[in-house]
Image 1 (cartoon, rainbow, N blue to C red):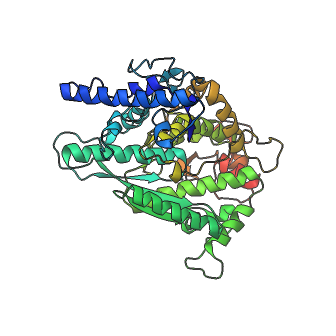
Image 2: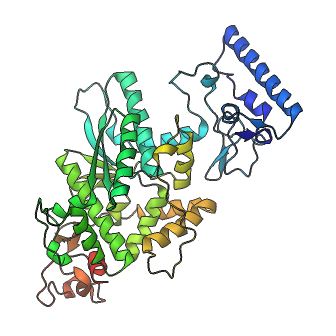
Length: 457
């Protein structure tokens, strides 16, 4: 229920069709509907300004978000018709329920509004590489989309689903197919059950796509990870004596700090995604990382000693694994995607697991990770200074991929390491690769500096 003080009779009336209804009949229908709504709202206003209004009416006029509550006082600069309800960075724009909803509750071809149009356009522009060109009958490309149940990956799936539907409607074919994969990092049975229930909701909402779910413990069976470097033998396939989740819990518990444990989980997750993409014949992986997330990753990976990997971790292109990495949401802030998730039709809010705010994280707590601190920092920065977040990503995207000549793959993360620079001792404070030793104390396992630091603390 909403109160009538939150509504504007004039704003609601303006939501009815204008330019799209040119016929005399259309104008008459719009005029009659507008008059009826104005009369209804005026009657309620005369009764009480705080009277409760049904949700069906309250939802027609969204409350201003990010505009200082100036509902109905500023006109959207993009359409020059509707009042401002949302903000794109520093630009106030509108977002209204589709005008067609006043006349047909079953109409599915809903027109986009300024805020939604901005979000979808930014994402789709990043998918130009995969568009259908000409009348060639090429088989659709297969792309893997990791689904974390967060707002970013949920919005990406929703946007691409609508994009594919538009291609089917126009050409009766699609440029690509989505293989949606959820990797469950939870080790508790109850959390796994909740994730399974939520994944079924996604399957029902997006039946066009192929879904798959794996546990993070499946990464323990990968052959291209140097398990000796982690001081643990490679688990035998089908080992029933020690369940996979228990082995995963034990491996993570060996790490010396909270940051090391979080880094190991992230690394295993990335390696498993690449393996699933290879086995599934996927050309690329479409990560749902927003501008905010990429900015967090830029500083986080640099602080961990893995800054050399940024050209692959924040930029579109081919990764060292032979699988393309793409970030269609790289031009959108996290807060914009959170707002968009509630404006989708129907809303995505019941499909999303929202993380607790990082505003109250204590930097002195032993359980606080570098990832937590960076998330806390950029969460506060994007609220008032979104250009700073965008500049971090824009600057890091200018980094060029290093040549992979004379490199060896890190035994854990799999990224290329220049010979003589592997491990903590390989650096030795000297950044001249010719002066570094390739072996220390008989240890021949190859790890990059970041992975060495995570394992050894």
